[in-house]
Amino acid sequence: MAWSEKLKLNKHLLNKITGMGYTSPREIQQKTLARIYGGQDLIAIGHEGCGKTTTYVIAVSNRIGYSSEGVPRVLILVPTKEQVLEVISRFEELNNNKHLLIVGLYAAPGMEAQMNALADGADIVVATPDRARAVYLKLGLNLNKIELFIVDDADQVVKQGLQLPVAELANSITKCQRLVFAEVMHDKLEKMIRPFMETAATVEVEEISEAKIETFPQVLYHLPNFGTKLNLLNLFMQDDELFTKTAVFANTRQTAEKIYKTLQNRRDTTVGILNSWSIEFKGFTSIPEFTMCEDARILIIADEQIAAEELRQIPFLVHFELPPEKEVFINRVTNNEGTDAEIMAITFATDIELTQVKRIEQAIGKKIPLGELPEGLIIEQGRKIIEAEAKQPVKNKAAAPVAGEAFHQKKPENAKNYNYSSGQKAKMNNKRKH
Image (cartoon, rainbow, N blue to C red; front, side, top):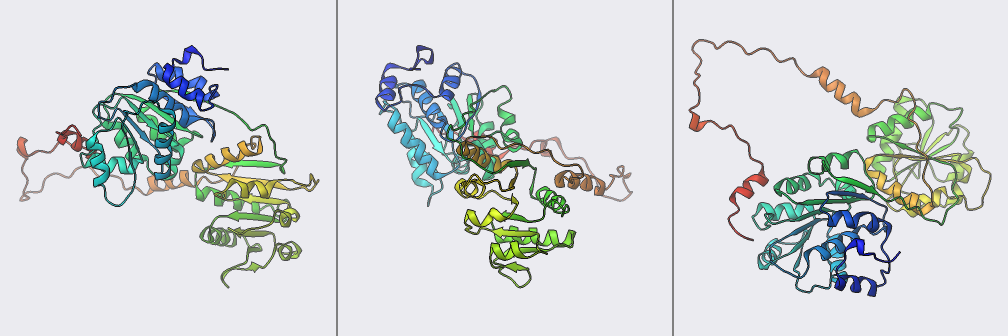
């Protein structure tokens, strides 16, 4: 499908895009560009590489046109400095308008250079949320004329704990169109964007790679937090008739130690750590040593480079944490030989790990089935809330004033009945154009 007139691209931009080899729009562009041009708030969900960044770069380039006011009209938030530079580079590639001023804000020694660049004029600001907020509070970023507020890789923004600056910046813009792009939607992301995306439409692109990788049977358990992961692992390991030999993968030694101590405390079972780093923990020097030990049932592997062939003698592979590189996970669960070995790959994932799950599914060419949480699983977060409420003291009724105590009503002019946020204070004090 070629670029159609319905997408309403200006002729110069269309020539630039097609000249670079973008002969037809991707699925996400077909589903979103018309909505963006119509002024609709939008949440776009799509896998890595589906064209999310190109989509809004095209939309912004087409919208702003050839006039440059020198005041920020578009604010784009991305998680990292590298992505700031990547987005700016994409604008320079696709945008035919050399008069548009683009400024990047990210962590760097000193802030004055970036503030000076804004003062010299900027039509588009691409920034990490924390740096944009810091510059705004120093009255260096003018949000009064923002027409388009974009959060890209919003799931990664949540993973880095940058929800607060995103929320403050969104609330500091009185009226504009808002776009959010992410690889996956989950509760924490939904909580971040809910206040400023209440009426937004959601568009999801489900493209799975055609090249399928043969893997062992898999199951995914979506869990709310680390504590619930420990509870589910302990619940599974209590079934010693089923889980005869299990490898549990963690990313760090700290996590491995926590798993080891939890399993040892809750159940008298034989647990070991591969290449143990302390005499406090029972250890095995190799996979064969573990598989040949009749008493050993659970082997904890912390950030070790293990050849996939060595794991073929272990019937259960539990990823307590997903490795940062999806290739490591795929290598462990790939059935290269097409053997009939009865191996099950089990994955525990919280909200912030769902992005990595999505990337793995895209790479192997199929969805990982979602497992139903077993009865008796203790959800750690819910239990803590209940315990906190139970411990909360009952408030007593206000005691009657005691004679002799000093008490007087504040004068109206001295009463403080307001509590402005830092963003509101900056906006109230903002007397400059830049």
